[in-house]
Image (cartoon, rainbow, N blue to C red; front, side):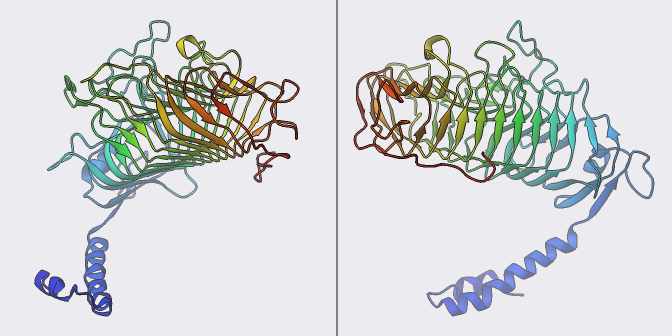
Length: 452
């Protein structure tokens, strides 16, 4: 056995020595981990040495174990507080029927011991439905993977006409109108949500920061549609909380460095006027942070708000903490057929991207997007700041850029539907503070395989 002292002594500038010693340690640790991991099974009859419920298998498992679940309908809430892999058996898609339960699956890092947080969880191949709140809720997690799940018909406790979700846990500080949506990541980092089908919940996929910072997550290849009361995919800063509820006068933890990539988000937010966008980025009040996220390669269409909707509604005088809605990147998306924004963030017609803020916004980059069937392709309203928009194809005879505030927009090198640049006969500019020369004399030709 190599001692810690030997490792330190051998970790020298000589990379040959490091290569010789450290792999032995890594391999021995990996072998110990594999030796201790077990695979448990679940079937609805509890036969063949399997458990009859998923919760019983979770209770019997040790950290690092795999639980394989066979076809069947399991009427339960599954709560996970340690490292586990929860996997559908080959050729099976077991159903977690959570009627009357808070959630279908709850990865609860708030309850994990000895320290809050849970890491290295995989959930794959399940249908999760009919929960009062979220289908899948992950709180205080790291390296969590949700892949190939079907999450539908959750948020049953929502009362849309009252804008309320009775009974939702106190640590979910701003869920009055959506009950947490189909999949909800809260205080989660370095996690992946891939190839899930999320439909007919209040909203689709929600990313928030009540109990800790949320960042460096990948949301990719999901089909998110027909969620009537919220956005398809939402990143929203919320008031800080712990397991007992809101923390008074605490700043928001922040949402940053997430990648939302190659999802299809459509027909969301149509249950009430202005209910939801294809993708929403929100820093709603003083101290909230939603920065440096990347929105790329998505198909965003036919939603109840603009394809990408960014809002801040709550500036405050010093010394209140500021709002950070800066440095987000929206690149290479196909955006069409979405609705206008409403109320204080109003746009005059159907809009592709709308950025509205009561404080200056800086550093947002909008590039290589293809817009069709919108009255306004990009709208920006802020009391200062600047954004850039380059290499976009504005294909409609409407407004390509609408500057509704006093910020500046660098909109050079775009295609304005005509080789002669922006005009009333092509795609035009509304408002002041927009630079547009030089422009593209032919489309940038954003046309990845599968979009057309």
